[in-house]
Image (tube, rainbow, N blue to C red; front, side, top):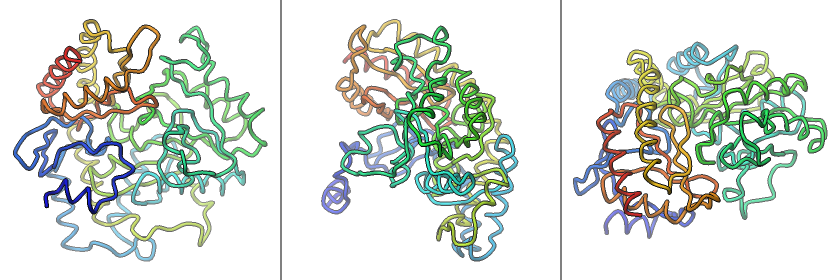
Length: 424
């Protein structure tokens, strides 16, 4: 029985529309190799996880060294040196006054903890999130997720959650155009607070760029307007950096593009280059609102994952990876814009750094080309390229490769996409 047959018989994949028919044996840098020896350029990074490249030597070596010393102790029962070192490092590299971290294992777990911390600190029970957002698949994380395709048949969800129209300029909820809209989507937060809440909002939660929503990229001044309203109402700003963190957008954290200061920040995915780890970090006075018994994680702050994360962050700093990502992202965007001139299927190209979305449409009315998106992904896979596909309409090609990808490899990506668009 081969791996695909074992999956069908023993792995519960009924919730997945389609597992890509690639049995991966190994990977290095931005290249994936299957069990038959075929190579692919990875343009999805295990959903924006492998930022420092597959099997990064520095990260792997740090994990191996730590495994020979200590694998698990529960970092909330005993002190673990890698856990303390990583918490210190996160306080140094995160924006503003963020200082104290709590470690978990995945993004949803960290979101859950961050939401609870916001309630504890503010003494309020409500949350405001964005339409088209995604924050994880656990109960509270889904409660603040603004996409019914991720929530159907799972409710009822946590009460006290309301949603603000997303800053989706290509499909503006208010049918306006930036900048003449004067950021109506941000200013609408005042009305959401006034009419949709019971005046007990603990936090506003948002992704700097909405990943699962289709790489929806807010205008540069969007969060400045949001921040003004939040401060007026003494509402915490909770930033979800699960996909945008760790140089993905050309900054260490995506929110740094917008000139605002989070009160709580959530991290996962790229934090340890594939080792399971997540964290939420807060200002000291916010973090200290947790009291004994309020929160814990058995595997959170695992010494091996923390050692891998420290090596991951050191690699990013020494290689000046964020600056490289800005250059590579600009290079990729220019090449993709050339394709947009030739292929009418391309409605918009958006994103920052190497977090790029290509929205596919059938006509000038912007009818989502989701069927075509699936065919393009299949074509790409057959020709050695593995992009992602998502968005609230299932029509956005997601180009989120390992950040160590070369310009030569990016040109190969564009060449395959060009052929795919021409074929479809």
